[in-house]
Length: 116
Length: 115
Image (cartoon, rainbow over the protein chains, first blue to last red):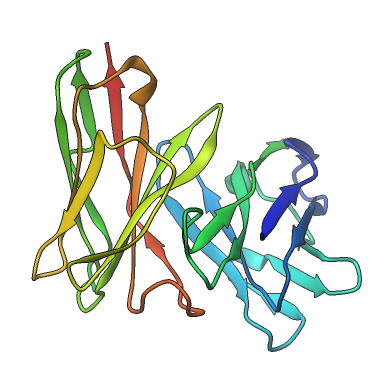
């Protein structure tokens, strides 16, 4: 079965410093991986996706993630945090078989706080 | 193009009542999935519909049901509400069903409070 683990439930950074949100996945075959962001009282917005093309994926708002098969990781980074980046971030793996877990399997989320 | 629309945005119900939530997908999308989000359990898959047929179902009791209409709009129903059903219910639409590399686009959700 596929699964995803977000290694930090909460990350706090200062504005202008780099952001690193860590995600490890488990998959028996080549996965599709996504990062979604959720601002307070809002739905989920797709930041970026990996679907077996380039291993370094660029997303919106300056975020990018690198797929590392050997480490089964898909960490999300941004060079310089902005106050508006404060939100909850979800690492997601796509289970192409569907089933009781559904198409998307979500990590528990990482809350990013940005200090002025 | 309009995004995924969920109505209502907020609902307050009492235990034992039933509730119906609505989701209008992005125009042209035929797949609609529903998720429940709670602080304790995170995001959990409820069910998926494609072309009016339920394709997948999560591990929820039979009190949770759904359907999809010919225009791809979907409703989910929860009967005999329990306090633990208080959650944010998210709907997502995509152009293809699960099993592909398609992206799911999410609505803003319906926040259900059961008193």
